[in-house]
Image (cartoon, rainbow, N blue to C red; front, side, top):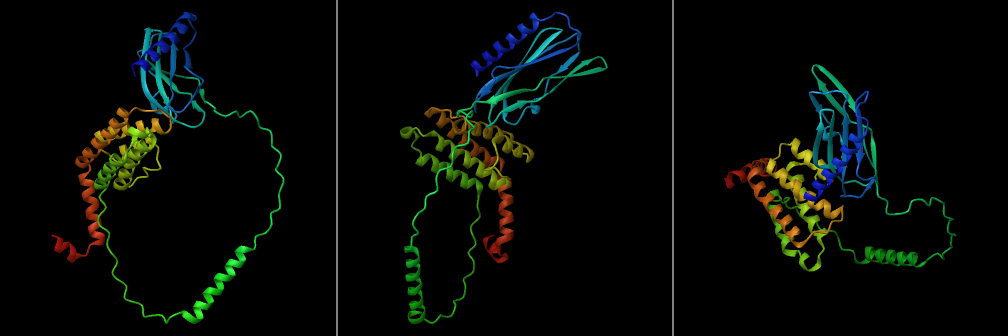
Amino acid sequence: MKFISLRLFAFSFFIFLLMLLGPAVTDAQTVRTHVSTDSVSAGDVFQYSVALQLDEEYNRIVFPDTNLFPPSLELTGRQQFKLSQFADSLAYSLQYFGSEDVQIPEMPIILYTGEDTLIVYTEPITVYLKRLVDEGDTSIKPLKPIFDFPRAWWPWILAAILLAAFLIWWFKFREEPESEPTQPLPQIKPFYNPLKELEKTLISIKKKSKIAQTKEFKPFYSEISDAIRTYYEDLYKIPALESTTRELLRYLDAYGADQELLDLTRRILRNADLVKFAKQTPTLDDAQQTYQLAIEFMNRAKQADSARVGHLKSQYEAQFLRPETKNSGA
C-alpha cells in the first residue's frame, strides 16, 4: 500500500506540474482528466486524476462522488492536491475487476461561491482490457469436408435382445403383484443450522487442506469463499453464491448486517477474488491469515446472528413439528 501511495503522489504531482506550466490566466474553468495507463488486466491498480484550473476563487469544490464510477472499478485510495486558490485536483487510485473495456463516464464537479453554484464536467475516458489473443485475423476459414461413416447395426441388435429378454420374463417368470404395504410416515429432517454448518465446513477445509505440500491455493480460497457465501444464502435468503463481492456487500448492507461481519466478509472475499480472478499467488502465511479471518467471522456470527438463527428455528418448528412433539420436547 505504501508503494501505491507513492505512485499516486508522483502521478498527481506530475499532473499539477502540467497544469501550472499552462497559461496562468484563462477565460474559464478548465478541467483535465488523465489515467496512468491505457489498458489493464483483472486486479491491476491504476490512477485516475482530475485537475481543475479556475478563473476565480471559490468557497468550496465538490469533486465527483465515487458511486459514479463503473461497478468494475474498486476505489482503493484518493488524495487531493491544492497548490493555489486557482488550481486544485484529486487523484483516485482504482483497482479493476472486470472482463471487458471500461469507460469512466462524464462526471460533474460543483463549484460554490457565495450563493452561486457552477457545474463543470470531466471528459469521459476509456480504459481498455489487455488482450491476450490476437483478434486481428477475422478472415473466414474454409469448411472441412463432410465424411460419410458406416451405419452401426449393433445397437439395434442389442435392443432386440433386451426386448426379447423382457418379454420372456413378463410372460413366464413374473410373480403376481403383492399387496402394497402401508407407506411409512415421512421422516422429518432435523433443523438445518447455518452456524453449525459453517463451523463443520471450516473444520473440514482445514483438515483436508494440503496447500503446504501442493501449493494449490485457488481451491483453498474458493472453498473458504463458498463457505461464507453459503452461510449468507442459507440465513439471509439472498443469492450470495451467484452474486459478485460488490453485489453481496450491497445486499448485506440493505439487510442491516453487523458492521464487523461486513468488514470481515469484505477482507475474506477480496483476498479470494485476487487469487481466483487476478491470478495472484499468495504465500502460505497469507492463506493461513485468510483462514483465521474466516474463524473470526464464524465467532462473530455466533454473537451477531444468534437471533436470526433462533427465528429460523421457530419457523421450522411451527411448520414441521406436531403440537405433541413440541410439548414433549418442552
